[in-house]
Image (tube, rainbow, N blue to C red; front, side, top):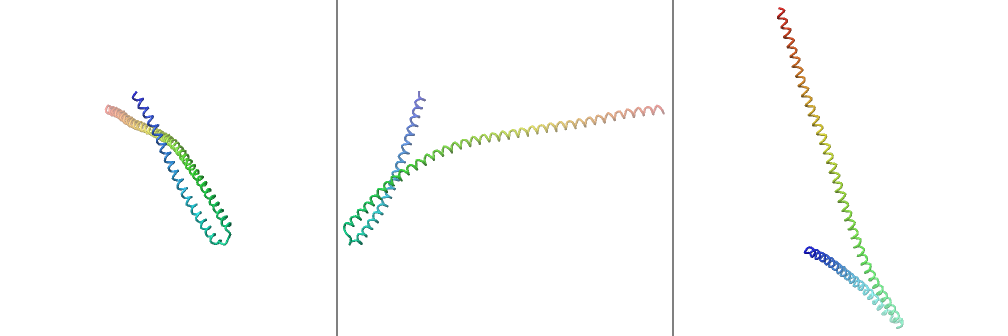
Length: 201
């Protein structure tokens, strides 16, 4: 019962840790995304403000140079400039939203590609370790067979050397025995000849 409670507690702990890590990663991603969007919005607002100031300066200069023109012409020019500025601001806002969405999609795609590459790398690493282990086993078996073959050849050579030495020693003993036998036969013949010589005298 204690082990079951411990396993249940361990399982719930792992689930809680997994959810907590997911929430932390999601909050980090959301904070990074908000920071990027704020920076992009501020940059585009600055650009729009600079463009607006330039356009306003151009309008003021144009108004100063064209004071002699009709007020209706000035009104139409200012209205046209305001319309262009509004279109530019709307276009910049839409472009900023599009870029934010593109950035988010690119980040998600890069994360998925990283995970896929990491899985492929782990599979390749596992297959490499398995192939290296098999190769090392084959090399060790080949070395063992070579050493065994060398030991057999050495044992055969040692036995052949021992047999050759025994043959040489037996051959020497046989030669010694033959020499002794011939000497003994010669001595017997010599004694007989000496005996017959004494009897003849």
